[in-house]
Length: 100
Ligand SMILES: C=C(O[C@@H]1C=C(C(=O)O)C=C[C@H]1O)C(=O)O
Image 1 (cartoon, rainbow, N blue to C red):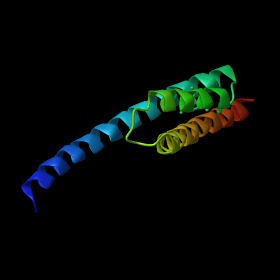
Image 2 (image 1 turned 90 degrees about the horizontal axis):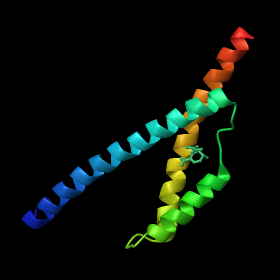
Image 3 (image 1 turned 30 degrees about the horizontal axis):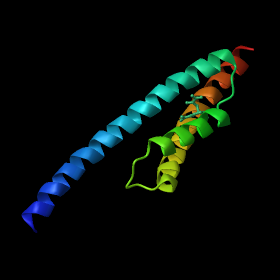
């Protein structure tokens, strides 16, 4: 294997792990928001907030990633945040149901 490709791939691998770490940190934070929503009786989804996020991302995107790909990526992130938040909200409802 070409040594230059090998070296660049090592950097890509490091970036992949950093991205994974950041994504999981984002999801943990949105999980905390989910706990707060559960206490406040608020719904999981906030479409306005999501639309603002996609707009903010497309304005900040300098490429070479397309805005469409950036939006798709963030749609995956928000969907995963909502999946985790829904687990938290469902558990909270179960607890409230159990205690009356
Ligand atoms: C994290 C939140 O919950 C949901 C997930 C969002 C996200 O992942 O950015 C944004 C809005 C909500 O649909 C929130 O309300 O801030």
